[in-house]
Structures are given as C-alpha cells and as structure tokens.
Image (cartoon, rainbow, N blue to C red; front, top):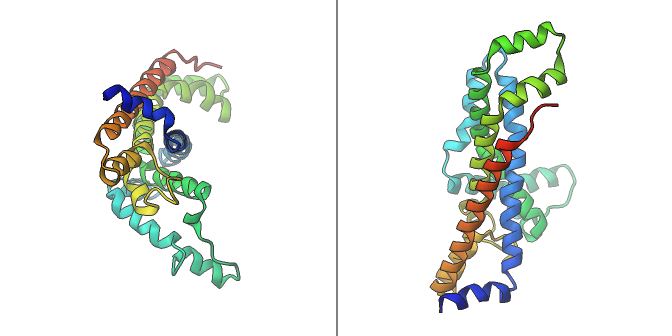
Length: 242
C-alpha cells in the first residue's frame, strides 16, 4: 500500500502545479528577502539618526503570527471593501479580483511572505556587517577601493557565512509556507495556489487520504533536505572573489 501512494504522485494532476508553487514560494521569497534584507542592513548599519527604531520596525512583522499577518493583508486585497480596491476606485480605476487570478495570487503571497520575514535577513546581515574585520576595510580604502568595487570584492565575500545562513533559513521557510496561503486564498481558486504543505492538509482532512498525505509529507521533507544540503555545499565552494 505504501508504494501505491508514491505511484499516485505521477497520476495526480494537481501535484505538478503544487510542486511548482512550492518552489516559487521558496525560491521567490528567498531572492526577495536577500535583496531587501542586505540592502536594509547596509543602510541601517550606517550612523543615521533613529536607526535602532527603524531596525525594530522592520523586524516587528516577523514577530507577528502569520495568521494575523495574512488576515491583515486579506482585508487589503479582498474584492469587496478591500483597502486597495477602495483606493483604486477613488482614483478612478476598476476594482480587481486579486485572488481570482492564480498567477497574481502566487505573486502576492510570495511578496507578503517576503515582507513579513525580511527583518530576519536584515538582522543576520547586520550581525555579519558588525563583525567584519575593520582593518581589512580600512586597508581596502587606502588601496583606493570605493563604492561598488569595495562592496563586491571586500564586503560581500566577508558576508558569506551570513549569506549562507540567511538563504537556507529563508528557503526552508518559503518551501513549507502554510498559514499565509490558508488565510489569503485557501489554496484556491481550485488548487492553483496550494503549496505542498497546504495540499497535504487538504488531502488529509478533506479527502481523508492519510496514506497519500504521508507520501506528500515525505516528498516535502526530501525536497527541503536535498535543497538545503546542496545550498550549503554549493555556497561553501562558491568563489566570492572577483
């Protein structure tokens, strides 16, 4: 019976779609969080007024339960009386059924998840920036390194441990995304925005198929384990020097 559950993966018309969504949530969130997180860390590592308050504000969403965050954004994007549609109609535009479009829904979920946890990446990069060997930075400045060259050839290579930690944590979080999807779309329309996590829930509770749900769970575990391993190995061997 166990093997039949894994064979069902190849017959399940929804599995490929759900798998692609899972990778989009994982990889998409990771890319967005690295870009924004590193940019914010570089900005807030400078001696600017109120930087500690700004750090706290950016990190605050990560402390909010995803269910609450999802509910807040649901009231922004919902069709009837949603904040975004209210603003659009006030400006003379037509209301949009954001969550009726599968592609738009997947993008919205990915962006919201990234915004909520970008503070985690920011903190990781800030920790890395504040432990950099300042003598190396000063020597680079004396040698005439400035701007982009200094960042690309000095700062970024020294941030490799922080980069690896942030990428792995963000990827794992995105691949097992559950709460945000359930609140915003419920996996719909149809199964169009499901991740493997939400699909497992649907198969187990709605279809009452515990065996197949278990097989999907094993697949999700293998995907996370393999990608995490490959990332750790790949990033450890990456040549950061120009």
